Image (cartoon, rainbow, N blue to C red):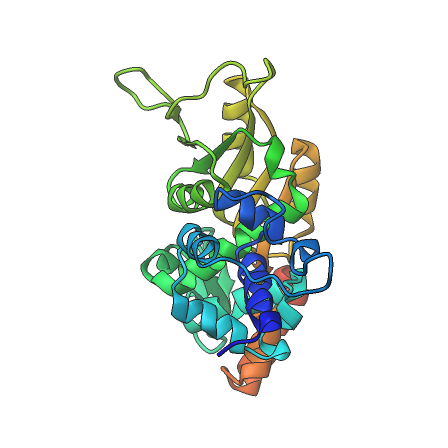
Amino acid sequence: MFTHEQIWLGLDRLASSKGYSPSGLARLAGLDPTSFNKSKRHSPDGKPRWPSTESLSKALSVTGSSMADFIALVEANDDEHGGGKLTRKKVALESADILIKTKSVLFNAAEPFTLKSGKKSPVYVDCRRLISFVEERKTLMDYGAWLLRQDADVRNLDFVAGGETAGIPYGAFIAERLDKPMIYVRKEPKGYGRMAQIEGVLPEHNAGGEAPRVLLVEDLQTDGGSKAIFVNALRQAGAKVEHAFVVFHYGIFAQSEKNMQELGISLHALTTWWEVLEMAKKGGYFDRATLSSVEAFLNDPTGWQDEHG
C-alpha cells in the first residue's frame, strides 16, 4: 500500500519523465489543469486529498504508461530519478548511454571508419538504428519532447517537419508527443506529379493569420551545412523556421554553430560526442587506448585525420 505522499510523488515523476509539469499532464489527460497541483493535495483543513482512480488512469493512458511503470516510478530512489526531475545533463548522459548500448555509436581506433568524405574517423554514429529499439526510442523521444518544452516554446509552434530521410521517423515521433501536425521536406522537389518538395499540408497562415511556425527535425548534425536545404525550402513555402531538433549533435565542429547563427536557427540536441565519451569512460565500454584516441580526435578532428591519413 502506497502512502499519500508516494502516490503524488509518482504522478510528479510521471509528468517529469514525459516532459510535463503536473498541470501540463493534467491538461493532456483532459482534466482540470489544476487537478495535480500541489495546492490541491490537501483540503483547506489539512486533510490529504488523493488523486482519483479515473484521473490516474487517464494520466497513464495519455503517456502510454502501465500501472507497473507507475509503481516503478514510485519505488525508484532519488538517484535513479534525479529527485523526480530531469535536467539537461541527465538527458544528455542517459541519451548517450542509450546510443552506446544500442550500438548506434561506435568506437574503433585500430581500424578507423571511412566517412562519406573519404576521411578517417575513430567514431561513427548511425541514428537510423534507434528506430528499431522500442523502449530506448520511447525514452529518447520523451526526452526530446521535454527538452523542446524547456527551450523552444512549443506552444507557439504550428508544425513539425521531418527532413528526408532519416529525420522523417523522428519528426513523426516528436509531432505525436507535442500534439502537432507533421509534414516532411525533401532534399529536392520530386520530378513528377505536383513536383512537391514539402509533403503534407502546410497552409499559408496559421490560426492567428501569421506565417506557420515550423520545427525542423533530423536525426543528427555534424557541421549543420545540410540544414540549409530544408530550412530554405520551408521558408520559401512561407513558413517561419527558428528551431531545429536532432537526436545527436557532433559538438566538435565550430562551423556548426556558425552555420546555425547564419540560418537564424536555435539547435536543440539530446546529446553529443562529449557525453558519449563521458559515458564510455564511466561504463568501461572500450579499452584505454581506444578512449585516448577518440578523445584526441574529438579535441582536434583535422589533426587526427591528418595523422591517420
